[in-house]
Image 1 (tube, rainbow, N blue to C red):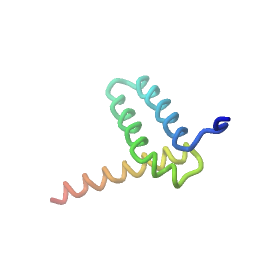
Image 2 (tube, rainbow, N blue to C red):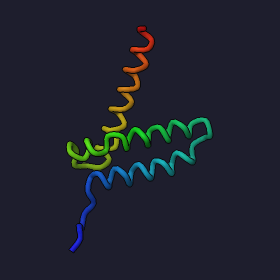
Image 3 (cartoon, rainbow, N blue to C red):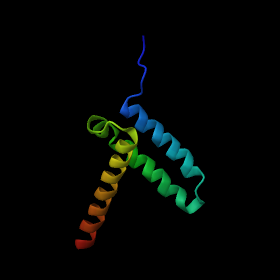
Image 4 (cartoon, rainbow, N blue to C red):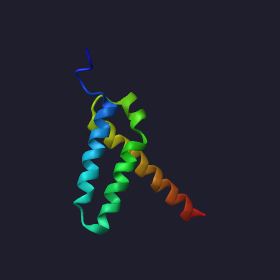
Length: 80
């Protein structure tokens, strides 16, 4: 007997896959931002798996963490 429900990690990967397909439909200059969002979503999928019960919540949480980290990096560079 196999698993009858999808894990949060699998759900996050499915969401990232759908977002990747959606990114291809964006205007050419915006596609890189969609692809970056997908990469951000996958970056913390394991951590989000441990903390979230809803895959969409995990995907958004993961992406937001990476966006904030990028903002902090930019801020630090500007302060130097």
